Length: 319
Image (tube, rainbow, N blue to C red):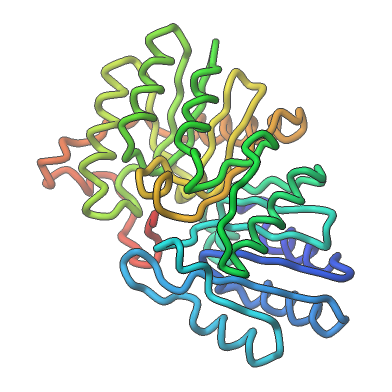
């Protein structure tokens, strides 16, 4: 996103023949809501789980919940086992699953760099369904960590660290937030063993006041160890992407953030499919070429925190 736009998701929903499962952090797109209504009217069983509130207390999904409920679609709030469900997944029938970094809101189809991976691999699709059913029925879920999915709060930090440790020649990272010492150490260790590390960040934009200290400090530490850092220029950076040696990718909903690893429901996917990795790498390379070298300001000196930043947007926060 935004290259493919909302229509790419609408077409997936319009292709469903008997069942749709959606688990979403934010649903604010009329195009998506209308696609769900069409599916419901043609006899598809549609079930939607929506996150009730952000960590800051904002209730973005109340209108969507009321709309879906009013037209007869099965809708529920996400599991109370997690303070926030940040997962963004759609399962079409039992044949395909979309695992994404973008929310189903117009902003993420038009203004932000985001990614989604569509998979038809049966073990992966079955696992996303199992996670949906467990959260829907409020049951404990133990995922299979060998199928290529990255679940929080089930060892996602370790899975992210593992793929960073695999890097031999290059490590490309496109993430907005850096609030985890373990992942910071792994990135520095990769650079220390000779891996060329490129990092695209979003600067301060969308970073909460309590996360800006860690994010700025982490960026400054990585730069001291030779990590090349640039700030996204043409689009707001919302994606979460790691590319290893140009051959392996991880993307999904989780930020590099302690709460994303340890507390929230999150979902990511790993892929070595050549066509998937090639498009992710080409998009990263294009963004990198348009980006500018960035040095994070001193986190304790707010005079420079807004230098070169996009205008503040209260509805664009890396939760």
